[in-house]
Image 1 (tube, one colour):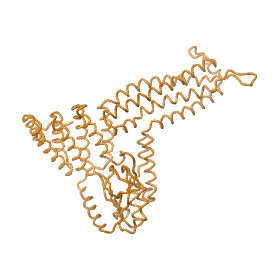
Image 2 (image 1 turned 30 degrees about the vertical axis):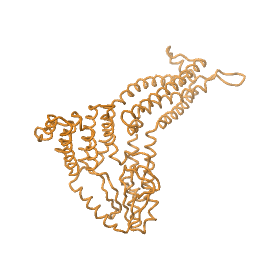
Image 3 (image 1 turned 135 degrees about the vertical axis):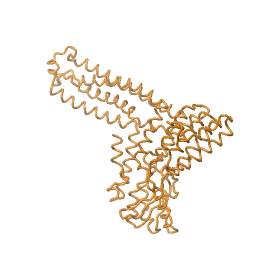
Image 4 (image 1 turned 90 degrees about the vertical axis):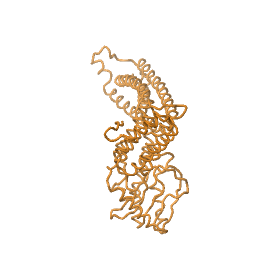
Length: 469
């Protein structure tokens, strides 16, 4: 469901966004709200709780129409007609046990979040908060509790003086018992899932799956990708000294830029907008956010540009590819710390980072220069560059693992594979630079025999190169 909503709230290049610059910004804000709801522990339980209340009203309505005779007519000895006192006891037990177990589930979830923050880093908490299983499990217990309470309130003994007839909803009781059995099965699965979720291989696979899905959404690499850089240089020359500066009205991480809205705004005022910060960077309040050419259009575009730039308290997965790579890097750096000292986790992170860089090498990043329907360049939105992203990741791995042969050997193997497989000049240059730097660092920190082994791995040809997985 979350992927469906994200797809239908995508405003990268929709006709509505081009027709109305504020439409895309509104949808972008809606997507931000949806992401917040998707990572909350109250939204799904609230939906399931409301659904349980609706189910109780429907089953009670059926009970009023069917009375008790339908159950007597079935003549099933294992489904006897339950009297009001027994019905109250059953529903009270179900409601009290459900709310108690829901508290236990919530406590276990918080414990796992604390453990995850300590072991993998606080930025990985967003992955655990998005875990739909934990949300549904908590919601199932809340829903059963709400259903039992709703049915309990209508169970009556009957009072002839008050004009009340005895009413015991047999169908609703059966459904309450069925929901109880479902919650027991869900609880058993929850214990299995919660144990699986803290395994480092599971966490890495989850981050890697998200990264691969984002990379597959990009267009394939093309030989003329350098044309965007040439066009960007020409656009910067157009600004000259005739531009006004728009400053940020608030501080936070730049989570998303609605390029379609910027293009439409610029075309409406026959201007050009140049965004300064890269998506994922922190923007300080009252610092330059964008430039507008010519200067006369600055005031007219100020409000629209502010709406089209989404700033938040944390980085987002929407347009920030570097955030996912940084999650893998953070796990690796924590595993390299003296308190953890887990080289095998580092090797797994190197595998995932190498796979991500290879897929990034074969994909085209969104164009920095955006055009209107007439082909006129109207906006410049800076993107994270492949070479810089790769260099930052590889350099940090090299610095922190330089005195560990097991880590350095795996890093050299990964870099050798990337050197053989990469085709993008920026990534290839970063890989060759870091491979040489890694070998130079190993010469001073590792034994001569180990350094010679690393040199031999780096010298492998296409024919005898080991397969990197």
